Length: 618
Image 1: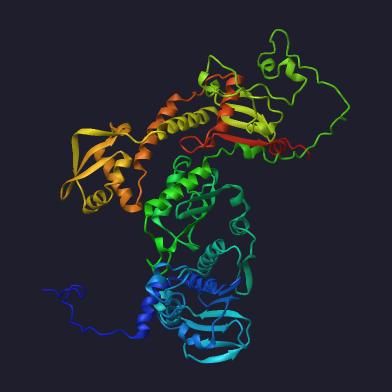
Image 2 (image 1 turned 120 degrees about the horizontal axis):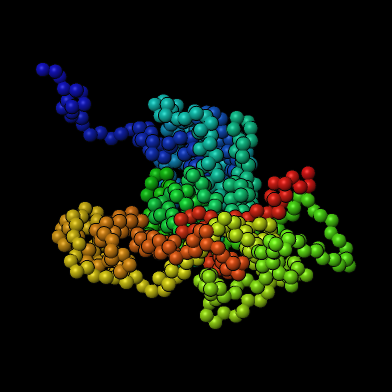
């Protein structure tokens, strides 16, 4: 009979013993230090907590051979330098109350000790007002005087030399360098008043000077296009304030590599926050595209727990629903305003500038003769004789029409529209023609506007339906026979914990037995759906994110289908008045830049772009 594998053999009894300090520190390092970027993150936290205004990061071999972080902060007194390398020694907190209301980047007091256990560490520091600086060798504990200005320099050499197995899991130097740069970038976005520079093997690879404002730092670190293609987010309600910038749907990317969220200045990755952002973009993103954003949430430190993970990248909110709603509504409000007005904010100059006649000259180009047998046709409708004398003026946009009354309808009590004096008054301009029964061609001060008429009208009808539905509470329809289903312990616990939340969603879910839940009422608009599937989806989101958008998402899908069927169809011939009415409604409708499925509804071609197509001015 073959012997049992060693993994299945009876375990030999080992006595319980206390681990040596060095092994304890190496185990702690496994939690805190994953790669060179982890060391950079911890050292930057300490530098910012010291009040630094300029931080220089020097790396070699992607941070494996050398990581040096220099700052001009307050520095450390000579007598505290040896204490800084001990485990759980910190100046950030001193009591439980300090831990529950921590406002600094670091507070655990284990980073330097953990790094010292797996690398060669030295600290050079000069305390503000001290006569000189001192250097501490992490291995020997030797303390010697050195020359240095006020501030601190921490050098980490030969990372993971004490744990060679960990070193084998590192990637190439280029990959590790990219992670280090990203760690510095995350801190730079949180602190625009601080300057950052990164050197690698003696070469300057990134530098962000101290900025006067957040937008300048965003442009410096993420590029001018990020600021150009994003909207300002600003909302304050109760104890939560949300600010920053959210990318427009057209700026969405295939990867989630430009998503930055900060809680009280700390970069975090949190499921509640990520779900809130994604929910806000549901109506305007196409497919699986990922939004871009840099958002900053300010909240009372006592209402958020940052002592959740050793890397401090995860947080837990006392009231996740409150935060979820604040973030979601802040982004929705920022994205709601139509961006058609931006198209005429700064008209582009054409490559070719024609020579203009003197102001005193008065002449009119004669009308083009198309032949009596063919007639003027639509040309007369586009440019009536009375308009030729003032080509800069626009025709009256909205006239009642028998063919498309829903496009020409005016709101009750609306005043007659006055004649605009310039293109800026109508961001989407005046309609010129219809192309293939699908697109509307319009002219504004920027150039040519192309509108997908079905997609545009679909969004208009959809927003109108949503407004009507939002005006009333979600009605609940009791089920004649309750729908029961076998529930998991998590679902039962969530249903009991959220008993006050479910009625607001139009649901009534009660325990039927210790392992069974009963759905007794569902939203009236979703009465024809599967109540069990709806209940499971809502409970799953409530368990994960403390909030659920399942009901609203399902309702919006129904409204989207209704809007799609109610919108003007392709190949429908519209008059110029109907086209102009559609353009005016787009300018007044929220989120009209995308259809219900996230596709764009209009595109702008500037005169410069048109000139380039025809090589004008070259």
